[in-house]
Image (cartoon, rainbow, N blue to C red):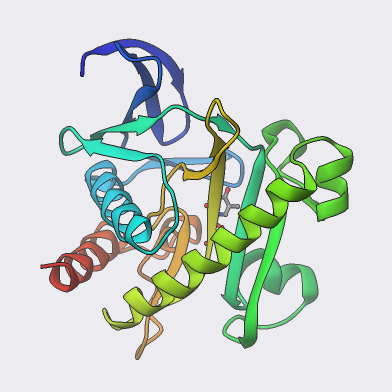
Length: 238
Ligand code: TMP
C-alpha cells in the first residue's frame, strides 16, 4: 500500500490517500487537545499507544460481529483503514456518571447506572458539538432512522464486549465516544479510534484515572497512565 497525499490533519491524527480508492492511511500524533482545542499539549508516545490499542480493540470487536474500518497496521503510528464518509455524530455511551453528564445533571461522578446510556452530539466544532436527540439527528439529515438504530445496536454491542474485556484487565469502562462511517454502498461501520483519548478508563479497585482526563484536568502522570493502560491491554491479549 503506497501512501499518497495528505487529505486532512485533525487534532490527533493525519489522514492520507493511498493507491487504492477504498483505503486511507491514518497516522496518529502525540498532540493532545481538550475543550474544543482550547487546551493544547503533547503526550509523549500517545500516538503509538492509541494506534496499537485502537487496532487491537477493533480486531476484537470484529470477532464479536461489529464491523470496523480496521484493515492493517503498517507501523507503530500508521494504519490502513477503509475509506468511509463519517456520520457527523459523536456517539457517547456511559456506564457510570462522569464528565459532562455529571456537570449537566448536577450529580457526582461514579454513580453506576442500571443500564448503559447512549447519547449523540452533533460533530461540529464551530457549534461546540451540541447534544442532540434521535429526532434532531433525523431532522438535520445527519442519519436516517434505520442508520440510527444500527448505530445504537453496535454502540451497545461495543459496550458489552469492551466492558468485559477491560474488566479482565482490572479496569472499569466508565464511558466512551464512538464515530461511525458509511462505505460507498451505505454500510455502516465503526470508524475513528478507541483509545484513552476517547474512553474513560478507571482502575477497578483504586478508581485511578488511566485516560485523557489526567490531561484535561491537569492531574499529572499522563504518560504513565497511558503506558499503564497499554501494559494491561498487552498482558490481556498476550
Ligand atoms: P464527556 O463526559 O465530556 O461528554 O465525555 C464523554 C466521553 O467521550 C469521554 O470518555 C471522553 C470522550 N470524548 C471524546 O472522545 N471527545 C470529545 O471531544 C469529548 C468532549 C469527549
